[in-house]
Image (cartoon, rainbow, N blue to C red; front, side, top):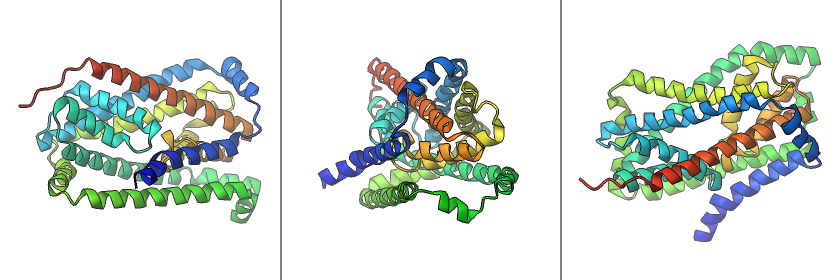
Length: 328
């Protein structure tokens, strides 16, 4: 059982992400990619995007602290934020382990109930999912004319789109769908075992219903908007790093951002592979050359992942000098 869990949690996501990346970048000229990064890319915009990537995680830490207050748990703000930094970095090694990591950090340093903390994480994920679905609906409605114009100008229809996919494209899409189903099966199986412990289930439920008792709802909404606005700006500013994306506009940025956010549901480290495939495909729809789209997704994802790693290292160091709160 332990070996199968290790394979499911670590090896399968790595293999899936690696297989998709290999399929996408096989035969690419890596010297040309290096040339784009060193000679053609405007790094100023990339650096300007970094504060928003950091802010997104800080807003999440502040919001989490707020959602814990109704269940009578009061972590320090610094510990809450550092736990978020560390959780994102941990998820690079084992997808989806970050939720448990940040709850463990609060338990370790501030003696916060692990089940209650996990319950509030469930609440956060539900709120974020609803927000993403709402944004997705609005963006699709706003950009419907763009898709229609594309189909009219190119004479493309569903048949030609499907016909244009190679067997490898179908294979990647099928594997991604299977991976999502396997992940859901695993999570549901684990949850059923976890809920056998009565006290644990009670703590999770208290966390889930804590949202109705949040003292400052406008602040909670502001934090939530701040999280996703920062995520978007962290992504959108990278468009201006490259000549072939700087002209695409806000609509394209919103569509590719949403598609990328949905793609990371597939359990690979930081969405590596599925995110590249989804965003690259949408950029091509907006007229970006296949080669340029590949450069964009590879460079942006790699650099932003390095930022996540650096924040995780910083959090690890900061927590090493953080005093453990004594039991009341």
